Image (cartoon, rainbow, N blue to C red; front, side, top):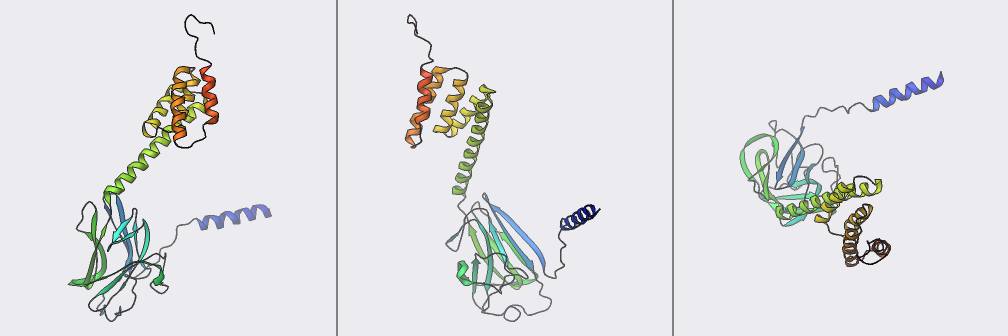
Length: 284
């Protein structure tokens, strides 16, 4: 009985722990905005304070002090690929965003710390990008907002607007380089998947024709020692000794060019040569 009671208690506690997190009501509500630039995903996560009849810059948000660029948690930017801001490259990842407003010029800051509440634990030694920007005067904007505009295949303008003030700056990314990188990743993955099927065919001693076709797809992308030797072994399973030796010798050549250990495979290929059918007119 005690065991049953303990089990029920465990289940009850575990079930409670699995309930979704309760969202707290915040007056400055959470928002996100995202944009794809070329093949780079960019997003901004922030909270939106309202003006509510207050004097904002110079009073509520004092000049010369670090500001979280929103409310509650520090505002954060996230990039799926490397980007460039004000001439500085930021690696793909998430960064906290801060501002230091002054009357005529603001300091824009990207910081590598994570999950900060406000700017209370702001550490300038973790800044990765800082630059100056001049604010603009705009029509009244009650709720703080971020937006992307002026899109090109490789850049976008980010704007922050609140009260009667706005700032804007450009984020760019090398789309041509990113596409080439993704293409390389795609072909590498395709070769790995084809090679995996070919390896399964060899290990399971089944579907050799499909395994050879898969090995050919892998070789077309990456004609290296592992893929070539895999095809040679599959051909040997079908007792196609001449073709197995031919592909095997290509594998050895590729392996030596890449400093692979080909010793055992060379012995295997030598063994296949002994299985060649005898030439006409000669006894084996």
